[in-house]
Amino acid sequence: MAAVAVFALAVVGAALYTQHAWDMLPCPWCVLQRLIFLAIAAAALLGMLWPLAGAASVLALGACGVAAALWQHFVAVSSESCDLTLADRIVAATGLDGRFPEIFMAMTTCADAAVDLAGVPYELWSLAAFVLCMLGAGLAWRRRT
Image (cartoon, rainbow, N blue to C red):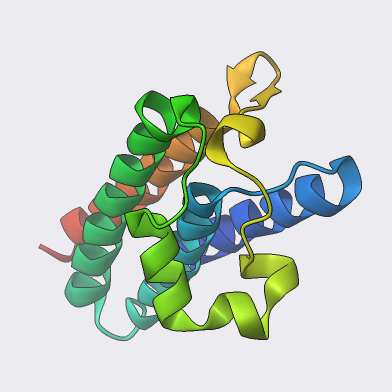
């Protein structure tokens, strides 16, 4: 589970790097996915103490992340405005966008945030990372049962 935690944190680090070094501004769904990756990292670390609960939490959070990435790819990216979506509401409810705006503030619309990285839409890279986190949690679950 430690590898899952490190990987999830590395994904957030990569997102922050592309935001600040390459001016790839995040939309609300991008920010929500960052938040989910941080929650996965926390659940994976807790999974070192409570393996089955941690693995189950990572699997559930990973499924939420997959859903968010798919929503961004198929729905939000074609929307002119993504104001007041579920992603906006969740991020605003945490208050993190006000406390840590450089990490959690949505700075563009989903349509404007649509970017390819190595020919693949950015949100699909995120989806792949969520799947890898889930696979890691699944392996941890299998080892414990």
